[in-house]
Image 1 (cartoon, each protein chain N blue to C red):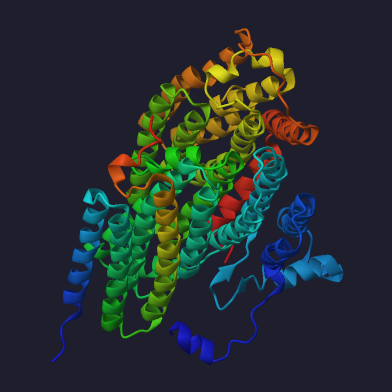
Image 2 (image 1 turned 30 degrees about the vertical axis):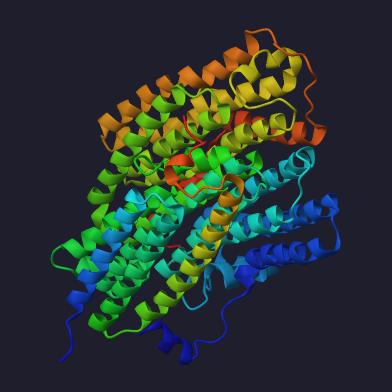
Length: 101
Length: 520
């Protein structure tokens, strides 16, 4: 007895919203970065769920692209976090605001 | 049939001839990448990059003119096929232009946009070397990352499929994140890059969730097949509308339309100024192009929905972009808000989903290349001088210190504002007429009023240059090459403003081809 695909889609939607909330409320720049990765993983679940529904593999192929891109973004993001920390010794979003009006 | 089945069933070799421009640019990028290990000679690396771009752009130009000749003039096919050049074009670009198993399409639409992307990048490269030399910093990374980003834009404008669109978008964005943060020991560039990374990453996630929803609803990634399956649906359901709305939000975020514009001013201000020009002009133009292609090819039956959505984005961008720009003291940041406002003017054309509207969008985004690149690159060449911080006060009395640069800035500002003899006026007129033609009066009124408001900040720069005495008389150092390239941009702005027929014909042609679906 298998779980219907709608449950997985609901889970992915929930993770997506959690990621969005994380991006807006977290104060630590590493946590913000993690939240964007969470959203990309939510998308992966959605793709696999829709593949279950459609009995296709194209969605699973797309998951590989998303994984690659998530890795690239995480690498760049962590590099930037390192650079910011070296220059400012701080990872708080609210103190890193030199660019504004 | 799924992608894997198609691959194993053996569709034969993809047509690599039509990929020559992309291959040239990639080879140039890798050459620079390797050469950088052996030489630190700036001139060599910069000239090799420009040479590669000129080769690629020249190839695109020749093919584009050939296709235009075949389409617009009544040459019989027999006559044409006796000529080896035309038969080459017919074989590769008119009959066999979908390659890589339906994931890549090289039609007139993509060729036109690629040509102008290459032109914009050449201008950025011309200004990049003097800037880096003056700042006593030098990385060949700038060159090959710009080239990789350009390849991403190429993939994006010629994608007939959500997969290649996504790959192109990410290749472009990921290279741009690095480019913005690349200025060593400068904190602002890191902060700008980080903000762009987070908001851009959110945009990526939203776009990919939209793709997931569209795939779940229609079972395909191909624009044409999505359009087909939407027509066969009995009712438009929540999955489809959700996918469309999320896709529009993600695209608006990448094009920095209000209310998703927060990254743009910070990223633009933090980046080194030639990179800002690259970010504000070629990257934006590629985004507008793919917005146009997606809405026209994949959602032709939902024009009301996306037309209204783009109208809202456009109105918000025009109003907020122009109002916030009024109170900026830093000219670079002011131009960043002005580019948000221009996103508004350009996507406003989508509120009128007619051939006229699409032609106006293509026209405005192509001519924005000249004025936008001109303004940002002019800032780049001024910023090389010590003590120049791009504030409005720095511009006081510029006309006395450096009359030629002041005159060029005046032309670019007038064009961004949309004063008649410049091309900015024609662009706005096209969008305005398209909106009137489709009877979207309220948006046309917003466009006119916000254009008048924008005079408040564009003319402030001009007034500061011409009506004040310079506070500091130290010599401003702008090299001849930079003056020449800015001069070329300014002359193009004026010539196209007086005689826009050629580009207008071109954009009308590509918009009608896009609507007829002849491109594919």
